[in-house]
Each structure stands twice: as structure tokens, then as C-alpha cells.
Length: 369
Image 1 (spheres, rainbow, N blue to C red):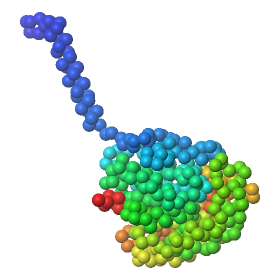
Image 2: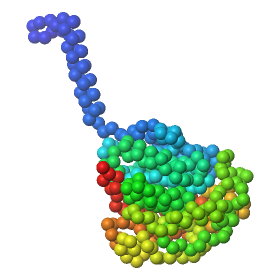
Image 3: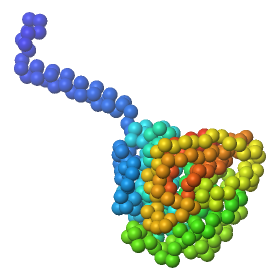
Image 4: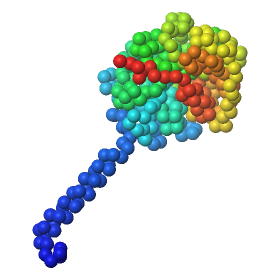
């Protein structure tokens, strides 16, 4: 190769080429280091679509009862963790612990209230745990606390703009109990009760609910390992210590099926709304869903009952809210017309509930020492 009047030796040429290639490689490495990196939570790879997502209809029993691929390392129990696959470091999220009801499973809960369909749009991180006995008790508290601590450590507490407890049925009662513990009262910004008890008066549960829900034994077509449901007496014993409102501060949303109320109107009295000086309850909107939810209880459909619930189907829901609450707290009641306890929530009402949660104030976890 000629350079001016000199001839460059092949050795010099190779050395120069190596320098150029090395410089270009370093520039490429530097650009790669500057490119946005997505958050990868340890032991919980992100999948699109989410792992073990049910089809629109006829989700198989073996899929519904799955307890999740993520291992809680201290107790060695598993759970589901759904989050946006394009989550960026420093991005603010709403963290939700979604707790199943008695006799249920994590993946059934994921599809009963299908937050997994909204993690991208609303930047949600959703942990769905499992009780090995299918009935929650204080023996599970360490496991639940470990999940919360792990997720917060992975995301960074400054990035958790709000933390919500969501619970269906006995999972709602468990949320109520957890809010009375130091750990969760210091962290939870809100509680969404999915037919899991209201902080305020409700009509008596109709007798048909208990006839379907509390048979003398586990139904013959129940999933393997499903225990008999609790008796009416044990259910009353679980509810007794939860009647007085908890001392913690948080937003509260109550959702239920119309038939669970015995087709009676839900009283507009709310001690929780009174606590925050809210105005009288107003009707905000009616949601119409043309698509059904994903899941239901196939073990109690012969003959079944309106109060317990039938197969998923489209429907409407009335959203009522107490406006003007102190500190911007969100307090609302939501009634799904013509529905019972176990029909999975439809897509539009699910999204409406997510929007209500997202509109509430947060920040408790960010303020922890």
C-alpha cells in the first residue's frame, strides 16, 4: 500500500487495521452501554404473552390450578409475577399483590381478575401468590412479606409509586387482616376487595350462596388436592375480628356481584368515606362488556346458584364513588349486574378498576426508611 512516497509494510498495515477495528468495537460497546436496558427481575423472566395465559374460553383445569414459576427463595414456595417486558430502570410502577380466595389457586386468580392483560398499558407489577392449604392464615404472612420485599428490592422502592392489596373472597378477608399488621399498614396505599368484604354495611348474604359454596364435601370434579371449603361457622369466625375498621390509612374499592347481595341495593353509608370527609356517593358510570371473563367455578354448576355464580358471560357494572375525600383517597363501590361470586371479571370492568387504583395517591413504600 502506498502512503505518500513510502510503501507501508504488510505488518504495519495489519497493525493499523487492528487499531481501527478495536476503535470501532469500543465505539459500538459504548453505544450499547448507553442504550436503554430493560428491567429483568431475578428468577422471573418476562414473557409475551404472559406465561400460562388462558385462552378466551375453556381454560383447562391443569392450567388454572398452576401455582406459578417464580420461587420465593426463603420459603421455597412459588408464585406468579407479571410485569412489562419493556420496563425501564427508574420507571414508576403500581405494585399489586393479588390474593386468591379459599379453595382457589394463583393462576385462577390471575384470570378471575386479569390484571396480566393490563401490565403494559398501566405499568403494573403484579405478584399472585398461592396458599398450599388453599386457605390463607397468619402462617402465610412471612411468605407474603418476602414476596413484597423481594419485588421492591428488584424494582427499587423509589420506583413504586403505589402498592395495592387485591383479594377475592377469603383473599379479600386476608387483605383486611394484613392491613392490621405493621408490615402491610406501613406499605399499602390501597385495598381492592373483590367480593371479600366491605368496610361498611352490606345486605345479608343469601342462603343460596352457602348452599352452593359450602357443600358437605369437596365436589367430585374438583381439581386434585382441593380441600373441602370452610363451614359457615368457621367463615363467621374468620370475619368476626375484621368487623371494626382498621387503623391504617388507605384507599378502598369494593366490588361485588349483584346476586351476592341477594339482589338488594348496596347501602350508601360508608364509615370509611366518613373517615376521610368524602361527599355523598354518586354514580360515576356504567360499564358495558361485550366479552365474558376467563374463568368460573366448574365444580359447583350442578345445579349451581345465582349467588355463587354461573358461566362467564358479558354484562354491565355500575361504578359509584365518594368524591372529595381527604388527601385524594379513592373510595368506591362497584356492582356487577346479574353476577355472582365466581364469574371472572370482564375486560372493561377490570380496566375501570385499574384506572380507579391508578387515580389514587400512593408513596408509602417510597417513604420507608
